[in-house]
Amino acid sequence: MMKATQQLHNLGQRLWLDNITRGLLTSGTLQRYINELSLTGLTSNPTIFDQAIKSADFYDDAIRRKAAEGKSGEALFLELELEDLTQAADLFRPIHDATDGADGWVSLELSPLLADDTANSIKMAEQLHDRAHRPNIFIKIPGTSAGIPAIEECIFKGVPINVTLLFSREQYIAASLAYMRGIERRIEAGLEPRIDSVASIFVSRWDVAVKDKVPAELRNRLGIAIAKRTYTAYRELLDSPRSREIVERGGRPQRLLWASIGTKDPEASDTMYIEALVAPNTINTMPEKTLLAFADHGRVGAELPVGTGEADKVLDEFVKAGVNYADLAGKLQHEGAQAFVKSWNDLMASIDAKATGGSR
Image (cartoon, rainbow, N blue to C red; front, side, top):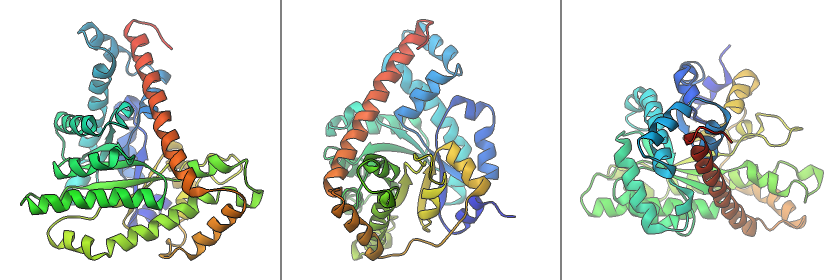
């Protein structure tokens, strides 16, 4: 019987892993997921690296060695991160080549300390892209007010971007328009218009935010409704004259990526979000536990409809229950950025402790 992961791939939705550890690479597990679970890409963030470095000893020798060479803090971590992610990118490179660059991507996040710093986000994105020296590495920039102009400028400069920390249709549209402006500027300047990008919509955090504030019948329904609303905007932008013009000039549309789709409610299905967000020409990046659960017992249901009628009805119910989802989108983006800052600071402390032979 065909695995659900393969069925989803055959429908045109790509499965990426939202995890990276040195153990995944050295044990051959990541390669096995590529071979057996239709995995075609990978994403990472500061929280993932913080957990990976704190919870195992895979990095200890490398940290001590680099510390002995005089490296510390962010500079030391960036070397570790680039080692892992370039190795992962090389594993996905055959997929990247076989799909003419459409798939096989690995994402590397900017320091979250730069979330409100447009100029230095652009500078660091260029530097990391150059240092990685791989055609299939995205640099992750949050879709904050400072991130949006950085995204446009980075695309114009030829840096592939994964726009992260998007929570609503409106935030997604702002990110997508920034991408299109960057490509249009490249076309006007006579530059190669094929610079890839994805826009990552975070789903489960919506339901975590309102779980104690709404009736039981509304639990675990807000994230999916927001995602459906965003998917319709995605399809409308794909069909817009502006997007078609970019494609006709040799560019490619930015793709929509579902992020934060691990189920947080222990009473709900562990594959709930994957099964609800089946859509061709999108990407679903999932934690390792969720990927394995979906491969084991997931079901591929109906594709997402285009149109917001059903989602709007659900959102109206949340409004009646006192949820202002427009305000909540901004709050979730701010909290998400702050959570990554905390993880980053924890990560620096973990590296410092291990560099001096201790542990956290």
